[in-house]
Amino acid sequence: MPDLKSRPRRAAPAADDSHLESDSAVRVLRQFRLVFNAVKTHFRKVENQAGIGGAQLWALSLIASYPDIGVNELARAMDIHQTTASNLVKALVSLEFIATTKDEADRRVVRLRVKPAGSRILRKAPGPFTGVLPDALAKLDPVVLQRLEQDLAQLLVALETDTRAARIPLAQM
Image (cartoon, rainbow, N blue to C red; front, side, top):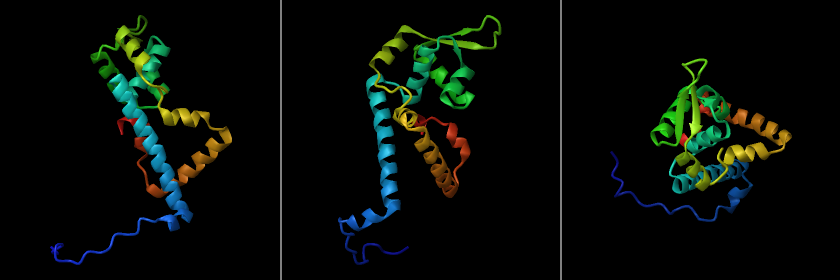
């Protein structure tokens, strides 16, 4: 193993990186950093103000908006795997924010309703409940959104991503 202490020190790169401003890859990287920071900041704010995670808050808000929603419907509404939705429901039940009841017609189906404690959480939680990124994407012009989708598809191919991660809520990453 090399002795790092005896090696001569190199000067740190100059702090002036203005020459990089013309580099598109650097500018796009900075844009991604801004997006990630906005998402992270929002989730931190949710946890500080509401005391629950962003995915839990989103699920809670959907259950409040659609009383008697089922777990499968919740998973579809959040575009997550049913197992992930079940885990969110278990956490919200254990916190006593929601109640579950069996469906009258099909006893295998569980219906979800917000309890008073869950309503209090929703009142004090910062919005948007879906998260800042889904909210911002929903506000984009359809043509811009389609172009973004096509461009990101090329980036995902270059990254060789695991497509299974697409259904994990950002708040849980």
